[in-house]
Length: 107
Image (cartoon, rainbow, N blue to C red; front, side):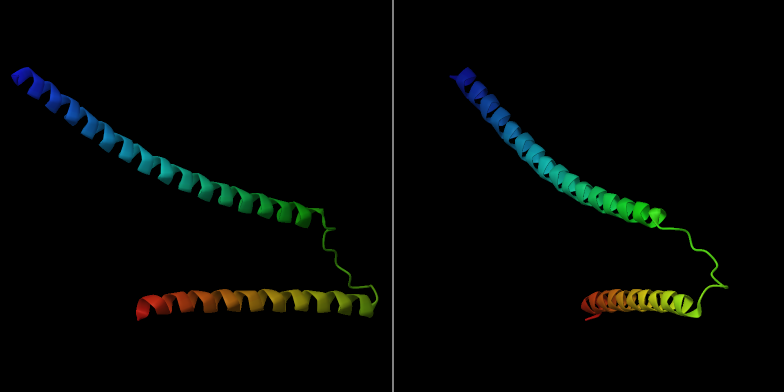
């Protein structure tokens, strides 16, 4: 009768240990999958940025057009100013979003 109790206790302890080990492995597996998803998002962003940089590299180089027609130079300058204004507006939106996120912590 004593051996039956010992073996029962050993089996129950083994099952409890297996449960705890399985739960730990399950949690680590979920965390690993979350990190893999995050890494995939980073790789996608990196690939997109690489495409942007390769497209920028394919553009013709900037040359000095001091002796060309003034209207051509003015049109190019206007395009550059518009691009600058767009970048400035996007930067302002990013800053506002960041400040709003800080307000959550300041309250």
